[in-house]
Image 1 (spheres, protein in one colour):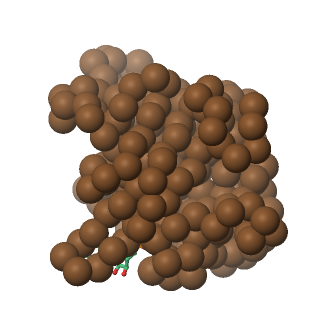
Image 2: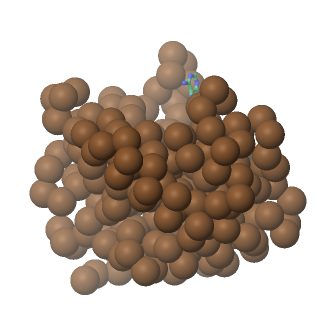
Length: 232
Ligand code: ADP
């Protein structure tokens, strides 16, 4: 595999991505790739295009130009139907504030992706319970998001993202709202679980301590990913 990302064997690869919101060019030719099981940190100043890159690579936003390939498919050209199926089965997403459903208990939040995929309530709850246990938040199973700490809510959000066995987890500042101890706990469970299950992680962070958990780090500036020698 080449160092410059030209190989076609990468699990996920975005090339020359351009995305404008009105007159703001969020991405100006950004390229990045992710290999199976790899943990990649994307760093850079606020407004440099990190979230937009994640949204394009996760098939949440279509780039104006450029390509996104995932396992041989061009995400930027897929129908909405196929794209949402792919997002549901292959990808997991975690945001800064977890975005758990406030009306549901932790157990129901984590069970939801399985229920949506057609599993029975009993099976979904049993598996959700196992995932809460694994992430050290079994005791919070009956609580709603407003009744728990930020760190607990993020661990529950991670459990929800991982319960379907995705190939890639996209995490946008998953520890951005947490203190350093809670950040460490969230990163430890994320990295441990990803390694165990061979899940690749694309992790956006502004925190060098969080980026240090990754196998590789790339930096963004002004809508582009800096070449490795610049980022080093
Ligand atoms: P980062 O994640 O590095 O902070 P973003 O990708 O969120 O950067 O944003 C890059 C630029 O694009 C910023 O100037 C931001 O204001 C703009 N932007 C991002 N998303 C939108 C949107 N949905 N609508 C309008 N502008 C946006």
